[in-house]
Image (cartoon, rainbow, N blue to C red; front, side):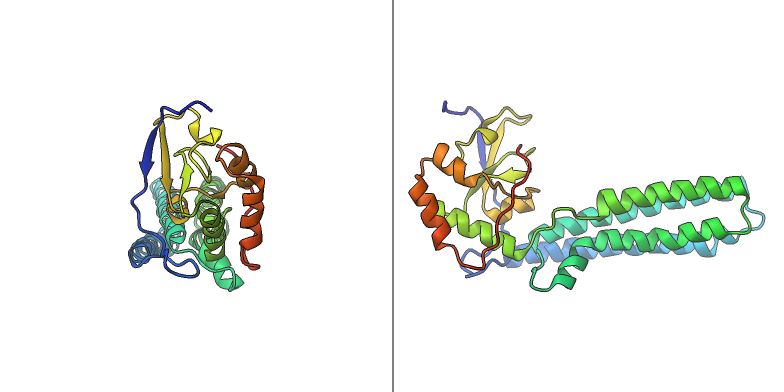
Length: 268
C-alpha cells in the first residue's frame, strides 16, 4: 500500500510491567489509578451527601413551594453530574489497573461500581419523591420524571462499563503481539475503538481529524481508551504487516493454554 502521510506518535505513559511473567501495572500506573479512585470516591460521597440533603431537608419542607421544587431539581442535576464524573474517573482507573476475572465478584463490582453508586444515589430519592405527602401531584410527576431521566443517564451512560477490561485480557493481547512482532507495540488512532499489530493496516491510515497514528504497548492503548486488539489481527498480519500464515499459526501454537480468546470489536 502507499506510504501514509499521517503523523506517528509514540505513547509515553507507563502502565505495564514488561518484565513480569503475567501482566501487572507499573507502580506509577497503580499510583495514578489510586488517585483517580480516591477522587471518584470523593465525588460519589458528595453525590450521596446531596441525596441526603434532598431527602432530609428539601422533601420535609411544608408547604413545598415552587422554590423548593426548583431546589430539588437542581439537587438532582448536581447529584447526577457528581455521580457521572466519578464514574468516568473510576473507569479510567480500571484501565490503568484492571481487575482479574479469577475473582468474578470483585471483577463485577469493580467494573460496575459506577452504576451501583448511581443507583444508590438516586433510587431512595426517587421513591421518596413519589411517596412524599408535602408535594402535590404535578410536583411529584415533574421531579420524579427528571430524577428518573438523570438517574438513567448517570447509571447507563456513564456508570455501567459495557466493555470491562481484565488483567487476563491485557496478558493475552500482549502475548499475541509480542510473539508475533517481538515487541509489545500496537498501533491505533484517536477515534478508533481497537488497536492493531502494525502501522500499515488500512484502518489506522484512514483520514482522521488529527491526522495522527499512535503507537504504544497494549496497556497504553487501553489506557488511552481502546477496547481491545482487533480479532482481525491474523488477516492483518498476513495481508498488511509482512507476516506469513505459518508465522501466525506459530504464534497461536506458542500461546499459553490459559490465554483467553481476544474478541472482535467494531472497526475504526
